[in-house]
Length: 224
Image (cartoon, rainbow, N blue to C red; front, side, top):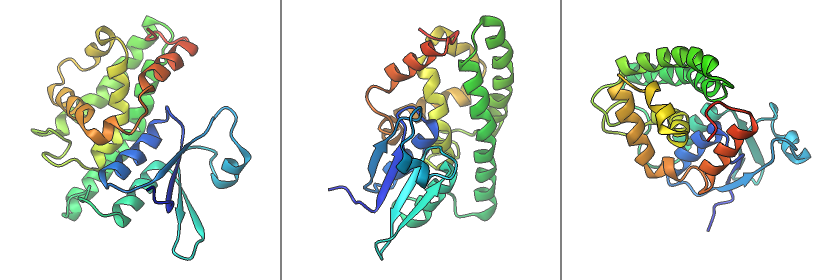
């Protein structure tokens, strides 16, 4: 039976929702998931979300009152602090701070990857790919032997980056592969994340089809 104490308000394609869903699944925390149409946001959702964006986590407290959390990293941090299961950060304060810095680095990396995928022609795609690869090269220099960001244990950094790498497993491999050439650690990390059950199960079975439709609707150069 689902625990009504946690409700994740979601959109099927949102990568930021996926971050929260991955952490919930890693923590084995029961939750309800409600998808909304972001092109026709319901009034009840707008009343909850100060930004009008997903994810939103609705938390039913012990006294029956509901608290609302927004912003994906904030939600993930709350889940880390309140749910059982393996810690998703190292104990060492310096290592923990460094990982949080790489989580912040993910914000612009995600934006640049999104821009690549929404290029409408080859020239624009190539220019944006160069910028995106610069971010990936910085990650390549930070990664170790893997399989995850900080070694053998799956952590919060992994949960944050996994939705970005998922995109590139959906588009044509001929188009995706050049972005990762010469980046063996990032490529291996990407493969390990794709195989993680929490990452796989953070989206619906129709996610790839939905994302391809999204690219076609936006006239993407990468639409199949």
